[in-house]
Image (cartoon, rainbow, N blue to C red; front, side, top):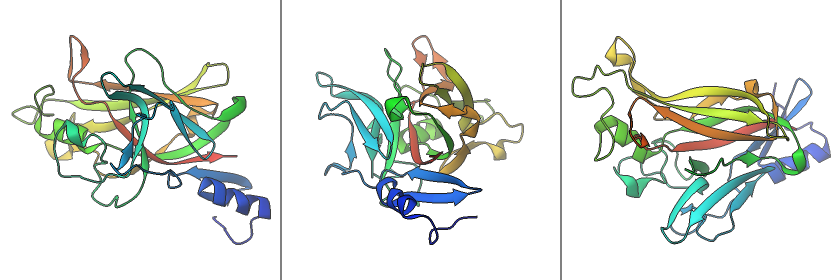
Length: 244
């Protein structure tokens, strides 16, 4: 049961700092929703200021930016909601027509380092859930194909294609605590009408990761070649709800 009127003053204060709080079965939850972050005029932050990270609530999101190539990896954040424009130039938009002006985090993997979202000072918390979605760039790449990636399902629509993201929890020592797999697209069904590409924010249970200090993200795809995954590997995240 949720209650906002009868929480103690200290809990009401945390609602202001961390965006939202609930109390369920005597456990206080806080939600990181990125709304307090300042968005540049371009509509997104990708680390080009060389700060190397950003913080929302208690979670710090690491970022790598290569100024020579003007490329980024790790976590960015965005407010872009263009769900119709195809191609790489629209890599910062979430593929949800109802997103509106909502702010959210983006993840793109590094090729040379593990990148984490982490709690400070070796703190450990249970993340109860988070909302996940595709970017528009990745979604259209899977839907119709592009110069680098195949159309999921192939020309006949029967190819058993898929794209997954694995969330991996780690304790303060870096030891793995648990993992979960979420399908961003799944075309493995015998009945092709059930094939899907995730096109809306979807709440995913993170509690199986256990008490964690940080988490990392990995991708896998049926469309993989000599140099790795061909499918664009992006993930949108929002509303990370964790126990205090």
